[in-house]
Length: 219
Image 1 (spheres, rainbow, N blue to C red):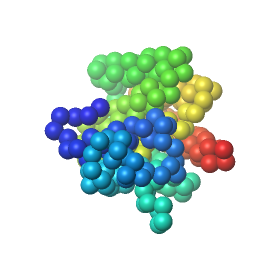
Image 2: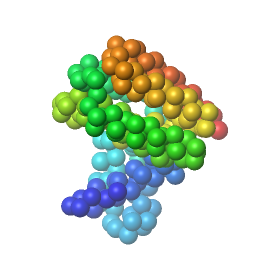
Image 3: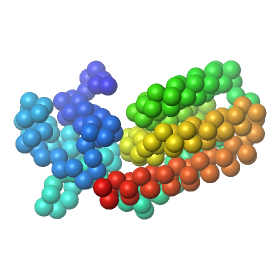
């Protein structure tokens, strides 16, 4: 969603990012400045700035003799991304006061309810959005802005890989059960058990991402 006060390059970057995250632009797709300038009705200068923004966000990379393309994450990069996220989340849960506040309980129950609805509707885009909100809530409840700001820097590439990790209905349901287990443990005040479940969830999610991305590269 475009925000008030955004520059033209920022608006264009956000619209291209949405196309990438929703799967309309696949990894490896070339992003030609002249075609994008025509599509957005502008000169190439704002397009060039938009692509630079997307490069910083981890959605676009520049390849010699090809120019800007939608980034294809290697297994090593995916592992590093998930390792950083996992460590940040562990710190957040360690600092999270338990039992959860009533507000925290209501928020997590609302997210889980909406996740279940997204699974029923087979709505991958909505599930990916809720997945991000679920993980972001760890940092809100920990009330640690430093951790929250660090996590925010990972959110855009995570939007892309989280959607890939739940590529079909079966993995959607598996992912949902993992999220429900972690919330259940937090609601019971079982912090150490929740941390163990979170680590296993991150490992399983990384495995799903790598598997689905590798499958997509072979098609």
